[in-house]
Length: 318
Image (cartoon, rainbow, N blue to C red; front, side, top):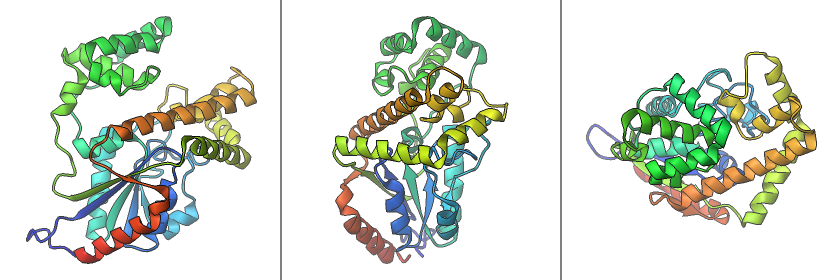
């Protein structure tokens, strides 16, 4: 293993990002079957216990065969933040290195990836009263109206936040109101938690968009056949969860929850879930195109990618 103390090599940390449905998990599993890799999830929904079918969570059998981390680490009633993710991910990275293995961080939660690559800004804590005021304004005028206000206050933040992304619009406005400074300015004054490691970052380029959309539709059909609706019903029947919980705002869960609440029929719920999944993939791709640190991967390049990593690990002594 590389001797970090003597500066022979910096320990490697690998990241694989990409939009939902691009095949990241399958790539990572096949690599882990060839190399001394342990997988660390970079997914804001996989952290929750009980969100299995709708998150396409790797099966228990796969996780028993190939080490996975940051899956099922909290209850759906908890809020799991980017700050907690960074701390947990760094703990996983250190433990994996101690086992003389290499962490491969895999997922599409771009906020988590950005937090690892650029660091987290020192931002003020949540202000429940201010958040309630922002939510009341959004209920009256709509989130696109508050997005337009954010565009005036912090154009850079607004450019990377979708007009209906309530959670991020709310947080950006909250920070701006509380500090008097744009959140984008505060976020630029950060240091990557991965400084000191040998970081390689790949972004999996999906197939043609029409092909990706078809794959997402087929995946949702499989989820429904596997019991996705019953999974959401079970979460709803717990009695301690609401649509305001971060876990229940996950794509697919939010739409099926609303169906079970009588907002619309099942067909409309499935249609909305698919539309939200496609919108998520579009936002992820938009973020990826603005990312200068990552190396693009074509879906057909898996063999070359795996070979490159295996060769690199061999050269490093893994």
